[in-house]
Length: 200
Image (cartoon, rainbow, N blue to C red; front, side):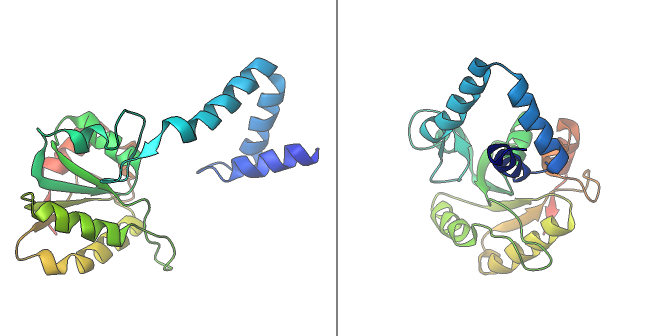
């Protein structure tokens, strides 16, 4: 295998859920496709940086006009509710339920039991301070039902403790089975979990 191929295999291995064999299959697939297909793919990857940006309020990625994403810019959404999710895919899954009409905050990851990982903890606290002035009444911790999700929720409960006198902190009801990642849950399960959320 050439040096370029090996480098591309290693690049694909950095994708979530992609192992060495699958990464190698991706490379051979690209070699078997037309030059125009590879050029189109390369252009699309380059265009991501130009066309997609991060909302400065909720930190989701989006490609619309203006600085803020559609949910943050939507004045009809309920300012009393703030849902904290791990990643953009979780936000998209919740939106598909058409059950929730509040605002979001994307943590950008979870904390592992070994103490690894990073989340937007300070940004969340700043967001909560700002949203309190706009009538925030409830923070919903909508994290995956995994050990990392639970560990992250525990950390968030700790840092949000000073707000408990004024803001209700809840978690999704367990229509979600243990070990379930939010982005892979169907709309009905997520709707039930959201409707049956409980005090955290």
